[in-house]
Amino acid sequence: MKKIRWILIPLLALLLFIPSYVKTIQQGRLLSGVTIVLDSGHGGKDLGASEQGVDEAPLNLAIVKKLETKLKTLGCTVILTRKDENDLASATAANRKKEDMNKRIAIINDEKNDLFISIHMNKYQSESVKGFHVFYKDGTSKLLASYIQENANVALEQDKRITKGNFFILNESRIQGVLIECGFLSNPSDRKNLINESYQNKIVECIADSIIDYFDSKGMN
Image 1 (cartoon, rainbow, N blue to C red):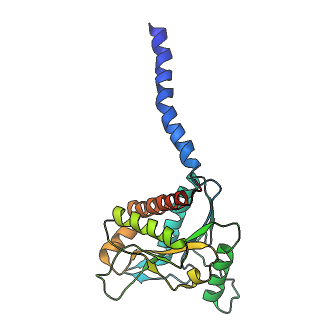
Image 2: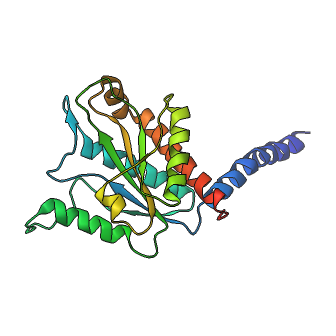
Image 3: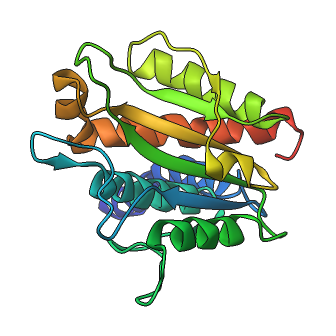
């Protein structure tokens, strides 16, 4: 009887492990063959929006790094425009911002890439303005923007609509993509949330789920 018990215990453990293992393998294939560029806005001396000692640039990078990790678990190839706190301009750049943005566009427009996500934080003169907001250029990027905005509206308990944006990175890109303003640093509630790791993880999950929805709708999964 004791011998049978010692056989059954590892067998039961294996049976409990298999569903979790299969699910992990399936998730790892969801975005297999997809290449996504993640653009972390600003960097270097350009800290982006700042409010009450909270700077945009490091928050952008923190969310991009989390999103990179998440997308890789889904089988995706991820390319970062900015990998650390620095911008992309050279030390001798005559115009740092122009060189930085042109280098980002060069990375994004590589023909092997499928789409890009540019992460930013917002600021406004009225601190009452708040929320996660997605901007797109045209084409199927509108579809991607819609998925991200809808998922974020549910997860973050808000009601925002996507907007056609006139941004350099959207205008100059040759592939589909969106620019996301994750919240307003000028709004106390948003600012408190955006520096919170669990809230950042919510944003990451929304974006990752929306990318899956996007490729599902195109019949690529």
